[in-house]
Length: 67
Image (tube, rainbow, N blue to C red):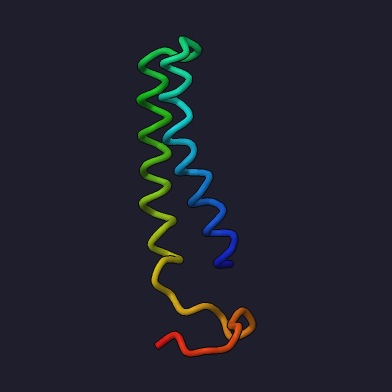
């Protein structure tokens, strides 16, 4: 589950960056750029706290303490 949340977090972060690049290249208009970036930002803020700062599952621990 943690890996899925991390992947979604990275996709959301890339989705914040990509529309601005497309806008600068003239491939996307400003309203669509703002909408995509807003949605991606909301997704990132919802998903990222679900996995950051959590102790990995015992099956994912490679030894050592996470306390």
